[in-house]
Image 1 (cartoon, helix red, strand yellow):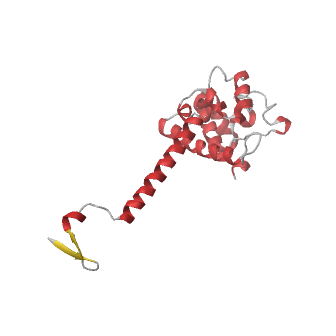
Image 2 (image 1 turned 120 degrees about the vertical axis):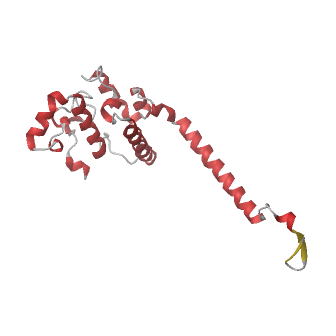
Image 3 (image 1 turned 90 degrees about the vertical axis):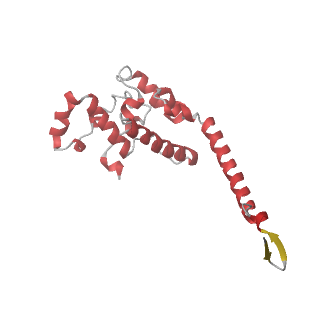
Length: 189
């Protein structure tokens, strides 16, 4: 069967079935090249940044970024060194929330370090301070729960690090010096 198309040009129907137009072919080519470049750059960046290491619980992963070296060094000298690593205190213990927090922190940290837009010395932010508090109470519930709840009414009124800022990382020297202040609810705003 023949179809009349355009200015009297005859094209067989069987020649057009299943073939995209040239415009569509060009668009698909641009899309394929763009996807290839994106995957290539993303893959290179992931490997260069040792991306797979962030899926582990090894404390040395935290010093992949040079800004964490003082925290890592102080943790090695602190009271919790033999009892807890970075992940035990700074990430939720259940699987889903742990990897969600790793993904969120990874995004925020990579953006901050790439753009050089971060506070020095680094300071814990609201959601991570909440995770830290949950983990303090999970490990020390038999000692601390009644104290924390009993002081001002709710667990959020008193943070463990208010009194125990040196528990995980030792003395604050080198982590902000004498002006260092533990996380307060005002920093969350």
